[in-house]
Length: 84
Image 1 (cartoon, helix red, strand yellow):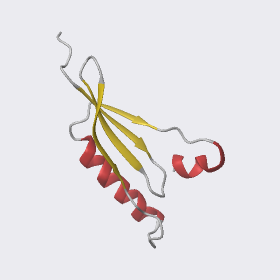
Image 2 (cartoon, rainbow, N blue to C red):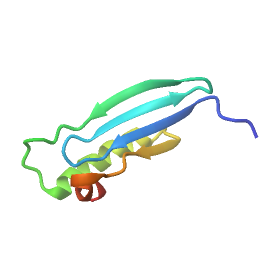
Image 3 (cartoon, helix red, strand yellow):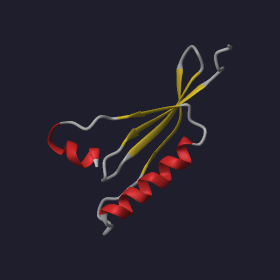
């Protein structure tokens, strides 16, 4: 079986307020940034459910052509919000 020529890696910081995303490409020798994005949810009067739907929609769009998904692990003070 041949190895793929490129591997697309979707990286995510899944905080509820201003989650960030990066799509990286590994070409077998180096990693290149394909795209960077975030959702600005600060200061908007959205419910918890609306925030999650927006994050899910954005993730679904980014993950269509991604091979690997990597997320930041929640830590310390606000870990319960990231895990939600």
